[in-house]
Amino acid sequence: MTGRTIAIGDIHGCSTALDSLLEAIEPNELDTVVTLGDYVDRGPNSKGVIDRLIQLSRECNLIALQGNHEEMMLDVVQRDQQPFRWLQYGGVETLDSYLFAGDMSVIPAEHHQFFDSMVDFYETEDFLFLHANYMADEPLEQNSVHVLRWLKLTESTPPPHFSGKRAIVGHTHDHGGEIFDIGHLVCIDTYCYGGGWLTALDCDSGEIWQTDVDGNLRNRSTNGQ
Image (cartoon, rainbow, N blue to C red):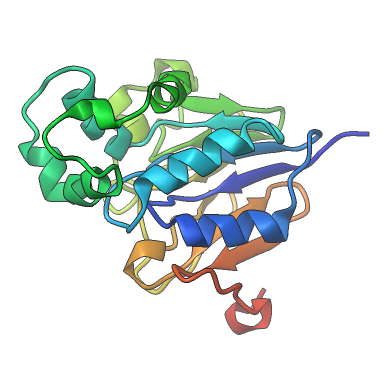
């Protein structure tokens, strides 16, 4: 028996939404769950999100991609860069969730281990998973970090990848909370922290789950699914 391959879009500190989403999905040890990055910043409980993802890694095969917000955070907390850009784009909310009071030791070692385990992309026989974007004529391992983590679809929407695989991405949020699906590419960043939804997609069956920041499960009939 083979398990499901389920992608989860940008969480951005929405721990209640994540808890409810996982309760609905009920992942098990046969399933692979690919989280597309941007676990931290903007939303109310980034620490809680990382705690839950660490727990999830013990329940299924978790593949955690690194988003641009993790890059900004780690530039500060692991590489001692100046914090101004990170704080401007949601770092304040993240530090508040860790009860930061001037000492980065509030981020536990287990969280650093999780961050160190993140990957830039994941690939299966049928799908490509990445945070932001890709170059259609290049293998993912040849794509730059800028493309994989930062390049929005609004700046460059790629044609089908030369591999013929379907791309599942996040990063470019839809203010209306809707999934962007053009066949060869699906973007499931549906703006949970801003009043939209946290989205999960069963990549093989097409089943979709969505929850809002308060953990309410969306009635599928409301979005035409």
